[in-house]
Image (cartoon, rainbow, N blue to C red):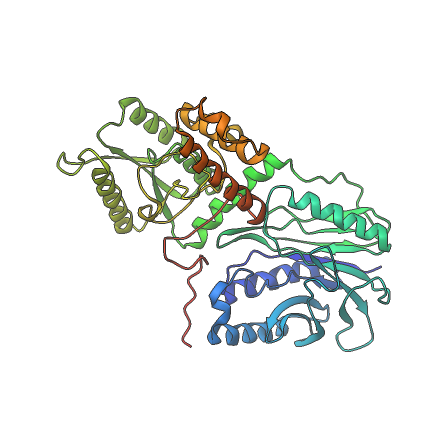
Length: 466
């Protein structure tokens, strides 16, 4: 009976010291629980979404050095880790201070079930104690099968993958382990929730959703406990909270600020930030601009009091806060300068995508650090967080239009007579809806995290001398 340790680190792309320390801590926790083998998700050392960093010589040399250092921290219990080298993505078995690169590069299509690579882990008498090979039905019988999906979280992903995992174990009669990274990386949110099934189809266990975690699981002793994934709505709420916290923490700021009157999503962003990071110092900026009703100012003050964040009202001189876009741009620029002077991270609920139907006063490029809430509709956000977001009637009408267009594939022409926009505008929205449907299906998360405009997507700014 093989007692297998399963770990899921949270990584920062290119931050080798932090990633290495996380892996070692989780590995040692598995040793304390009696693991005979520890499985780690591929690319846990370098980070998954490294972008152009992976092309730099300094990055590759530091990756090799970090892998060698990690091997020195591994005792007699082997650690399975996938790492990139000149030939692609390869499994390494680390044991007793040495690295044993496996012969086969991790496959992407040839020897896998569906789109998820599947490898077999075999026990042997060599120095490594185990070996790893791409698995096929004609392969020798391994100790267990290891699935290594690399996709970021999206609605329904985990349910679909666990059903595939269950079918695989029923078809082969072998224990099946799925290993995933957790947390936020650049614009992606990695799901975690690594899981395991026994050879007879019994569910063995699952690690925490979106969080770093570890466990030692025996493939022949299923736990007698009900396991279930959270409902899709709760997964999305968790994703929004986790993504918000990751984005703020990985920028290195200890305080943040946001314009509470920027858009209808601003109260939700303030709520998520405070809920995800209760100790974070948050300032709610309340600019007094021409045309802003007094009731909106009072509502922003009440929100700040309710959440326990500091409210800072901002009054602009009359020449500065003139009517029209220029006054709003100047106000935003002044708030950004204030945030930089205070060393606070300026968050923005402006979306900048085609799907969010709110009409912001400012273009996304002026929003400083970009913190959109993904391609969610205002009506969907209002359903998820009742009381925090109430879409304006015109926004709700447009949301309903877009949802019908891209989910029910309705024609835009009959809708033109029922809505105030012209038919040309309706067709433009229809094109946006089609593009957005592709985004919703192809891009993993419905929460997008982006850094400031024109900056690298990776939140950790990697500094190397090539």
